[in-house]
Image (tube, rainbow, N blue to C red):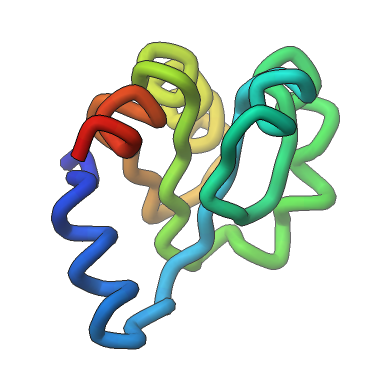
Amino acid sequence: MDATIQEIKEREAEGKKDYVLLDVREDYERSEFNIGGIHVPLGELMGAFEKLAPHKDDELIVYCRSGKRSAMAGQLLRQAGFSNVRNLEGGMIAWQAG
C-alpha cells in the first residue's frame, strides 16, 4: 500500500517519525528540494542494499519526483528482503502541491 502525502505530513505533525525515508532521485533533484531521509539514486540502489540493511524491517517510505522510480525501487527492495516498503504516492510533485 502506498503512503500518502497527507499521511506523512500528519505523522510528522504528531511527532511520529517511526519510519525511514529513502530518496531515490538524482543528486541535482535532491539539491533543488528534499524532505530528508537517506539518499540513494535509483541507479545505485542495488549496490546500496548493505548500507540499507539496518532498515530491513523498518517501515521504509521511498520517494522520487513523481512516484514512478520509487515504485521500481520498492519492488527491488522487496525482492531483496526488505519487509515493509511503501511508495510515497505522487512523489515530490504532490508534496510541493499539497
